[in-house]
Image 1 (tube, rainbow, N blue to C red):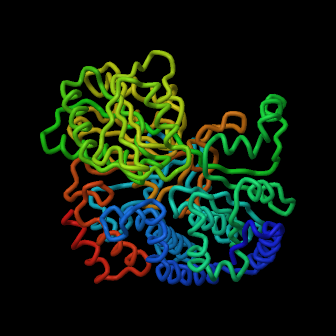
Image 2: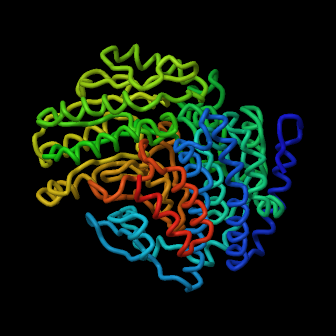
Image 3: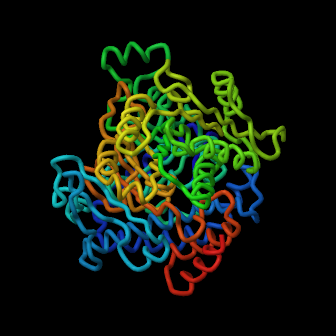
Length: 559
């Protein structure tokens, strides 16, 4: 059931039920966990249409438009894919499917998690994904074991969910359940708490077993939940400010607590807290077709979900010595001018947008439908000084539709890439995700520089030639900040979730894709058949089969 503000005992009730669920976990075999996954896949699919309809209404999206594909992909599709991948991993522990292959890259142990089969090669042609383990960690030590997953002492986790993407909370729950052996109390975010009844129906079986409880509420309910003495650990998705308020306390005591190392919450806490996401554009010689594709690629990274994504493109890092830089930036501005503005549904977005515009006066306000009530234009600022005082665009996640560009010196990959890597690592806030755009000719010619950049970038997820939101949606790689943040300086957070391979010792992941794909990617803003493809992909992830696969392929290739 969903419990909420109307009950003073809502958190207490939810924790009591989760404690009963944790006790059930002690006797839950791997086979029973696989059965649970099967039931959840059935129920999530059954609720998908209504779930998406509510998401669309909240964000001002016509549910019959191609824009609604975002809510299918960022909602039930991602959850169903996560469940299917968890099913594969648990089946692998029982010897039913082969494990991913291991290899070494930049002297580190790495697991190849995509492509794993013909289906991957057909659905995502040219893509490959690898999970890099921390230095010194061997594959045999990182791989999940049945006795570890089932035998770990069960407990209760508090889960404070996000308000922007409807699949985040459910996938966080699945990670805590299957990787950490935790029953969860999930507190919804006030921004999307209308989804709570849909989650209740989609996860009915887990709720009946006490493995999941859902609490609707705000800061008061969240504080009561994380400080409950029967809650063993906490996971939060949000901002660094939210994390600091939980860990270090109210504003009047926060800095004193931080200085003395005396946290207000002293229990294990993991967090995913966002990032100023860079897009590194390596200089090369691009054809007109390649230029058009990459312009649409970068623009789509900004506008998806009205830019309320922790992986939205925020800073383009280009080369001042690239002859095509002006052509590229002008084309990005023209593309953004043709993309409709979106409802700014997240609280405080108008104020953040205004602050960015005031801090970067030499910018363009772009987009169709500017001035429409509740919408914000796309803001594009170019030529920011990479060596000057920290501009707002570098130091704060904007959390609205703004994009900045800064040029560095370097006419070739060997000259440019080390500067770009150092700039991103040292000057930009956060370590969650980063995109690197580099044409295949430059990769072949400068392979050592390319490999060094992948090794040196301190980001939890790196996507080559594609948006890091794709890495999130594919579900084959863990999601979280690069290791190294502390409670005192948390930035993008600590720990990995959505870890469907159930690995230990993860450092980061790299998703590499084609510079110019055969077909327009489904996540592009101008995909002409996005809705039909997203619905078909959702059904396929729930229950793969030949006809469902063809139903994805037919509209997908006509984008």
